[in-house]
Length: 331
Image (tube, rainbow, N blue to C red; front, top):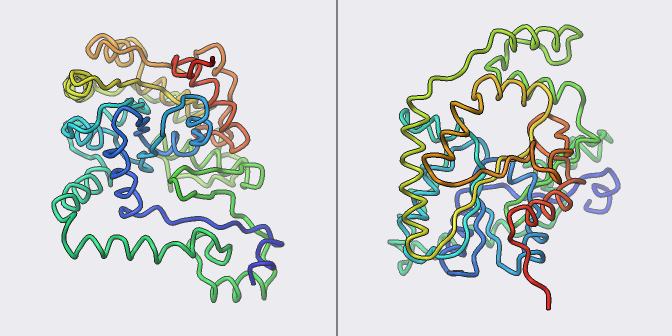
């Protein structure tokens, strides 16, 4: 069955569970100064190549981004952990900070809380259950019959017997990074669906319709800047967390990942630079590496408007490391 599925174009992928994230969070705790910890949401999961980070920096990277979530609970957990003395790279997204007052952080708050509870149980029998879950997940990481959260029986029934054309354009790796092959994703529907989501129009337009882009353009014209109050509250809180990490010798850097097309235009409308990015940099005292403006990063295009294609992960990561000044010195 594995040979047949690979011929059909399916690839092994893991399911990104809280237990998987907790295992990586434990690694971050153990690395000390050698740690290079990435936090944020899906843009960093898809756009950052972990092996390139390791090779270029000489540090040991840890992927702690969580899809669709604010980075604030994770940054707080790192700030409260005295063992975190390495480098933390934060995927800056203003809506992640805007969530501070409402505490609408998504799964990141839940996963961080589970990690803290797991630490309290680290020497108990309950810890063995975490290990058992990771061992049980091992086959899923290596067998194409588990692609797209399927199982061998479903793969036989719906893929091999039907000869279904593969549309698996997204894969999650054991290190929790992800890769998207947008060359096989349905376009422009994937792009328009993402733009609709960012504008709050998901489910309100048909991304396959010939009028979808016109509808989104009309919506774009009506967008207004978000209120700055919650953002400024969140920024002040982030500044405290950054100061706590750096006071013990750690380093915190901020990167705004690339965006394109309607997604970028909508975010520029919601979060104008002067009211948001410049205020963030002033309050935190940290410059943000803005990918859409940095000389060696600005030409990367996101096919869905929000994420890089897998073919760009390595060159983007390499250029980003150089721009951040993290490249290891060669003898």
